[in-house]
Image (tube, rainbow, N blue to C red; front, side, top):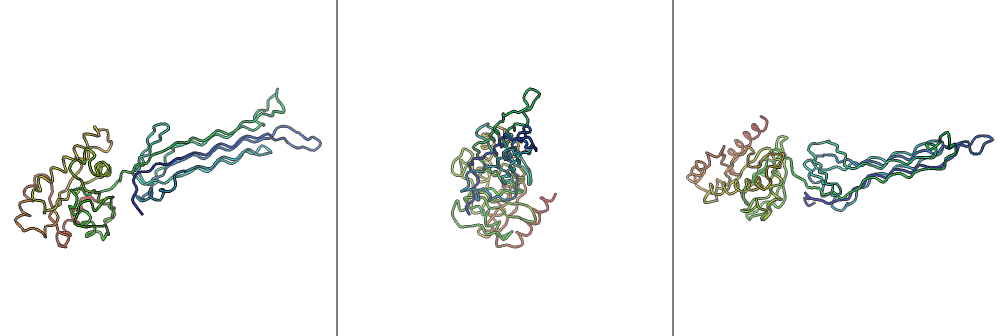
Length: 330
């Protein structure tokens, strides 16, 4: 099933049921006064946060969501039943925009319920029109239409650790090695065209598509990548030791993050991406000699904590994973 993080759908709340004209039937009196009940209210629409990042893919061929209508009123003063509310499950991190009103809703946590559309009120039955001057009213009203709108949904992943770096930095390979994930890997750029999520001791890690120069301005995968790390709590910046200039590579990715922050203009309530806690991971140390590893570590040591790993070196992987989990627990 292909990963989908953007979707356009139509949603409608339920219509209210109509009121009715009915009369009491009493012995010896055919029409004993009005008894038409009111119509039931239409169902409201709520969006609900769930832990399923593939949920939008399941909605790929379902473009309309409609809540239940309220029932019409009944005889003997009985009101029609209210329509059932419609619950639309969405992945945590979904940004939902109502294109009719411009309202924007953000799904932040699991189980969170957000009302997005109100169902129509039920109409009035003739009993409600009875008065001292109108003993046998024939008036009634129809139920109101429920609110409706076209909505767009954009999912911004909420993860504990986001793996960033240029294409072919070794992100998918690292996740495969430490968690047993089966992310597709190969020795060419842009193998990963969609995020891969894995769980490590209860923490969610995301291997997100690689950056290229100009991503902060929308080039290549650009915004589709950067949008997903906006809500990430911690960044692992992976740099392949195959790069001749690891410092230049590091600065290029950092520049793209800052460019994206500038374009947001400080509007993100998640804070700047470039200010998030970052750990540097130098990968593929098995492909270079010790001198290259030592030089690269020294060059980047002033930028933060630096690890050097190889997916074929169990010892370096264990040290890295143990310290990463310890940091996350703290």
